Image: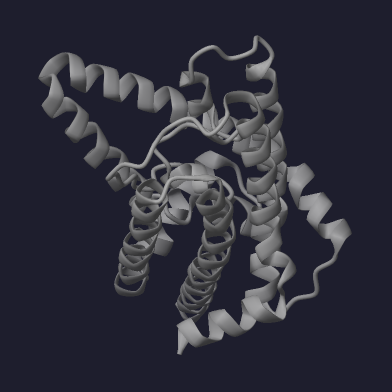
Length: 264
């Protein structure tokens, strides 16, 4: 069973979990030192729209993490805050390349070491930064246009649009690293991977959104320092298992597509 196999792989490569966890903890500590535990307990859920290394900031509606540009929405920030955010985003982009390659090595059974982690981080961080800029500008322009045209309905329409785009491009970052291609080339390949694994991919996407929504609800309902620290560990673990499953599906689909081409 894929799920059991994913848990075994993650437990045998425990270092994988600590990459997003340590990065998130650092982001939380820095953000907390800048704005404090801003916010209060509430009933709220945030769906994952962002790409990048798994982070609790993706499911929190209260800006607190220094790896997310949303922190700039906090009042009375020090003038240097934007520099810290840029630095943390660059570090995250670097870690993401190594993290994805680590996932691929775990699933494919290939050897992996720290020098490879650094190599793939160095090879891909600029592309991930560029991708993040494209997504940010896209969010601003699309949301602004829809709100201007349809007011509050536009906000909901923008949310639906970006959820659909996140689902359609679910393998984009994996494709960039695994196939060692540009963003433009990865856009074409990732559609093929999703098309040839619809049932498994959409089942896992449903699980991802259900699980992350539950974590998001608990974060806001029990808002506080201990909850945030605990959620960093839980989210890092859960998302690493889910990411391992996505990589497994991608590798199987990639091999199936390659065999079909060879047979033809």
